[in-house]
Image 1 (spheres, rainbow, N blue to C red):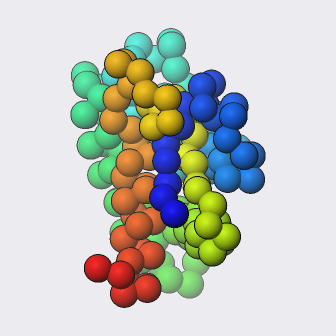
Image 2: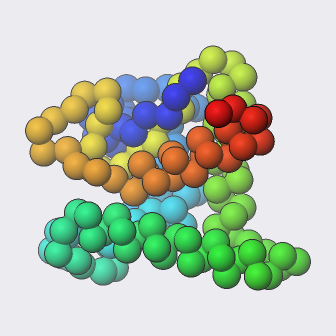
Length: 142
């Protein structure tokens, strides 16, 4: 089964709630994985940092998440919030996959079920890639 990114106000309202994981800035459970960077004016969003383009926002997000994860790997016996939340998401993916169910990442950037011309790349693409890579490595899928 695959992971699909859905817009929280479009397809996010129609997919099964047990299969929807809100990775937007409004998320309570997965807020650590939300993107703090935006190309929009800050007064129109909950982001902390404004950058020039969508590509810059995703690039900065990817670098930031990698840095957080690298710092946590240096502290193996301490609480690791970023690794913990990614592992929780991964475990949910495995459970859904075992039951032949799709997983949906909710955000505000794009909707893979109901695409619009103004949809754009999203930080969820990177998280989706991390989940797939871990699954493929642990299950020796190439």
